Amino acid sequence: MTLSTVGFIGLGAMGEPMAANLLRAGIDVISCANRSREPIERLAADGLREVADPAAVGAEADVVMTVVWDEEQNDRVLRGAGGAIAAMKPGGVVIVMSTVSPTYCKELAAEAAKSDITVLDCPISGMVQGAIDGTLTLMVGGATEDVERCRAVLEPMGTVSHCGPVGTGQVMKLGNNAMVIGTFRLIMEVRNMVVAQGMDLDTFMEYLNRSTGRSFVSESMPLPRKPITLTGMPVKDMRRCVAAAEEVGTAMPMVTTLLEAGADDNEGPG
Image (tube, rainbow, N blue to C red; front, side):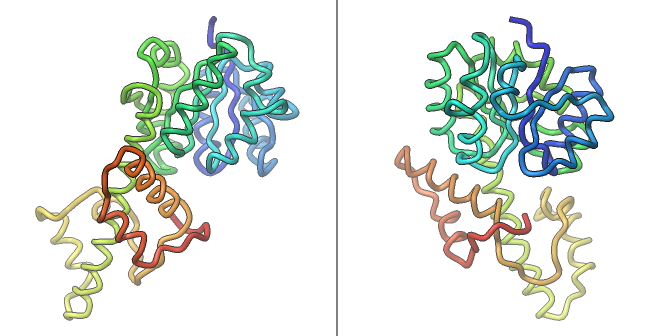
């Protein structure tokens, strides 16, 4: 089956520029309004075709990509009589680009396989600027032949990084995010000490980034000057990471401690 039409569901801060890069690469892209109509209207100028709902996306698309918040939102657009999978033609592919649990992706893949639909998990890293520039890291889990079959519709968005079988893309993303978030909190604690001891914060950061303690977080991420409570995406991803560890009988005491140190479950910055 030739993969010529991409159905893209989830045109938020990451999804909209990702879909824009697919359109610029000459790929036929369809979508339906999810949370807002504005991205649909903006991308229509570049050739995006709008259809009525997720089932209509599935009926027309060879590949359906989702960039929504969590398992619940993926279920809403993919599963059931009104979801994309039930309407897809045999031989189609679903690419879950949300950050969700590895187990969720394995179960979805097993369910979709009964209808001859392939599922890849492909969470993304690179922040909004990477989505705009088409330089995301695409952490793909799935069989080699399925990843290669989808390469042409993935590469306009970034670098395809095949991590292993279905679920390992999520393993890679959760591990990466736990390290980024942990580093962020550590740097914030150190910065508090530096200021309290009377050192100029900008001087500290300049010298840190010449020294062995430097990291992507210290060099490239915006760091608030005052302490903040972790909310939204960081909390979701840390909880998923701890749960993934518990499923296979391993411990993550540092990540668990970070969660217990005042993270807030409300969606917010991050």
